[in-house]
Length: 355
Image 1 (spheres, rainbow, N blue to C red):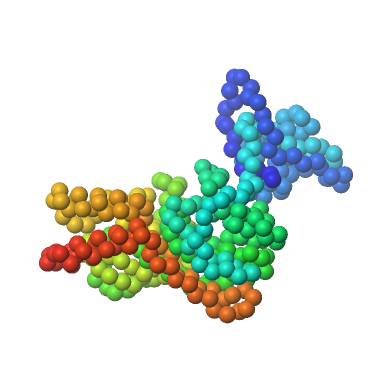
Image 2: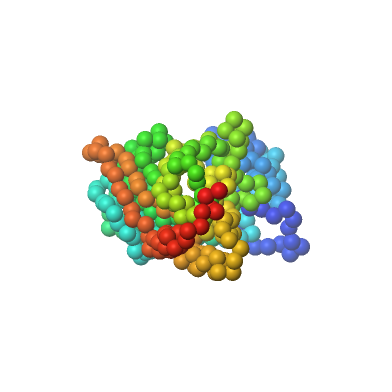
């Protein structure tokens, strides 16, 4: 496979490093003279022209085994290569024997209950040990399933440290059907989330565009709906149970943006409990006593990830056209955490958290 990520250095070392081939193509006989940066942009669909120009400036773009600048004109028969100072990572998906909690399976779809801690798709820092690797092993005897074929497999994703339901397409037809349902927002998904703070209202709606946080590229933030920044997002929530300083919510997604629930809840001042990236690992509500601080630390130890679980999933079966609805019970870490808060609130007569 072609590694389509260009990551070049601004300056080259005094000692010329070994270069590794990441991309190679021979211009066909009918090739019209075209700048090499434009030529490569057309071939490397996930790399910008600006990044290719920087690669050329760094000496990483070669034609016929010689480095060229961005304005070099590619002609018929030219061999264009991208040479980088690091080996090309093999992005082929390899089967790995990782246990799966299968909720439902037929010839078209597979529904699983993903545990917290399992990365869904390979990426930077997680090239193995992912759900995709597990699926490659699980379907190893299914001739029609190729883990490297984007026309089958994952239809949607949830975060590494979020647990819960996911549907996987076993055929191209199933992926097309399910993909359309997610795009048209006709699927039904709900999450259980334990968040900091007390809610007076029983339900509510959060609308705000989701965009990358400029101060932390691994975190999302919320912009005004009419700002033109980010992607529109709407989250509905209902109170399931109040525990004083924290609240258990059902969150229903109208859209499905990256970190949507986590970002929206932080935006309204109620970060998910134990969500370190969004401020949920701080004691945001409660008492100043040492015993309360110790209690919260025990809670953090019980659930060492954001308190979020994809509990329900509903869709129309791609072949039978029947409605399919699934429910996943809370995993043990979240169940223990909620029971601990339930015991805490039952043992106090204080009402200061209601203010």
